Length: 513
Image (cartoon, rainbow, N blue to C red; front, side, top):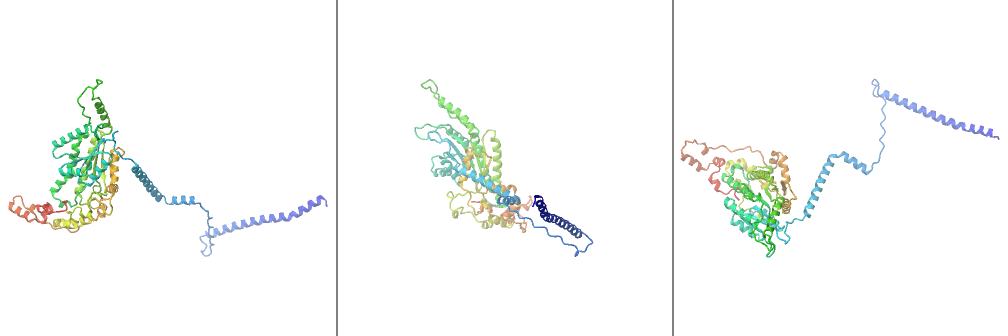
């Protein structure tokens, strides 16, 4: 077979393949056209309004979405996108907790020691103006003495000096100042200034060193009685303001001349040395260096006040709320006056602390203090009807008497660290909150509604009030004196409720410790 014949037979054998291929293409095109026409007709019939519902073709269900497998990271990103608020809260809480943990660890590792001389002698003096009987005064004085300060505790009576001596610490001493007698108080300050201006040797035959006043710490009384305003005798208000408010203010006023002056060493009499120079040249140089260091390391003023009650001002706490608010305002004014003199003033707002080891056992503490139910029985009947129920409910609340019920309080170590950080200049804040509840109740007092706070403390509306009864105030001014005396001697409940009589003042009540 020739080559031409073979080529012809190959062409004939390929014809069926070509026919099959072309017919497949034609059939596929026809199927697509028919399917498209069928879809068009179905869609048209399904959307025709005049066609009955049963005659309309049903639209086919859409095909299920294709399952796409997501990685773990993609699923995590999707969860974060769906829970943005929760993620933000978690990040904020974790960040704050981390910050507090890092800060606390740094504070724990920090070495807190007072500055000393080369020969080991103490150089810095701290004055604690607080009653030696207060546990806070004792713990703070002992801690400052342990850290290397010479501590002077202001004593107003002989009993206070005996308490200071009972601490049995050579560097914790009493500073007798009678603030009720301004001339004698001024003389006491002059003697204390002369003490600071005189060099002192830590041990015999050692080089004497000059002392510097590092701080004056004011610790007013931290204990207040609770009672309705109507049942507090006027004399008790007067005693309260004298002992809790006026005495701290006068104490700071007594120390202000010392705080605002530059203490320089007292120069001895001039003598000639072997080289012809005066022997007090070193003292003059010491005085010059003291002037510079006094400006750089000015004495600091620390004022302590309890902050839980004064932050929310609850009912039946008028004494503490009034005194603490007044001391806070006084501290702000004092800060503004001493700031131009470069004398820092820090207000330490205290929460609750655990004074275990500095107070007696709970069973024998305050043996004369009555429970709320017994205390209300000594009130006039009108006062009992108006206040007794809310007073007893508030006394059983979580923050009764300024304490957080069921919690021991912060460790005194936190307070000691906060005080030292202020003394060495690490903390330059004007207001420092320390102790359990100090920051929380400060936030509640600024933002929470007063009615909500009172409701949470058990204060409820009183629907029943006592009936008004005439008293000695109802009589005319021209009435006989005997009638007034008789009305007053009867001791009617209305008179006791308006102004507490002598019988009520003489009886034991919750106002007295």
